[in-house]
Length: 210
Image 1 (cartoon, rainbow, N blue to C red):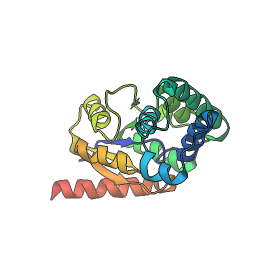
Image 2 (image 1 turned 180 degrees about the horizontal axis):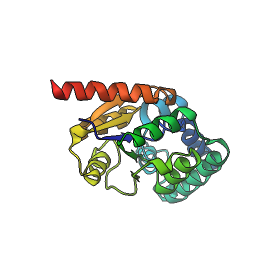
Image 3 (image 1 turned 90 degrees about the vertical axis):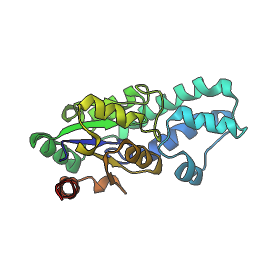
């Protein structure tokens, strides 16, 4: 039976994919570089900034000694965007409040850094519904490695099959499946509703009881 719901953040609870894309490109343009939208969607989506920079260097396009500066600038630009664009969504507030009231334990696992997660969840009015969150700074290997979800499940003290994980991109879905938890694939932040989540929980519980 499902006892906890674990959410990815970007593309699931926060419509931030373009924010990260814009912030990283703004930093890269300082050095005449840019990631195309096609590359972003097919190669870089869902990966932490440090991993993206490593990949760019492996392609021969970026000196490694610029990584720290670019990462710092990207985080700064992301926070500027979050400050003006991140706002509560009624469907998400309703979903998490109902789930929490019904006894489900809630957590977030995101490839973002801690400060970004805390800020976004606070501005989205969702932070107080969460038991905790796991960032890319809390694990040795970010998604698509399952360590982040394994860490969250262990912290909850539950078995993987007692957890439902909401994910929206290939790297996150791969990590969620590898953890052994049940997965709900999200196409858009609008898909994250109380009705949709509870329907998926019912499916998982019915399969477990069969």
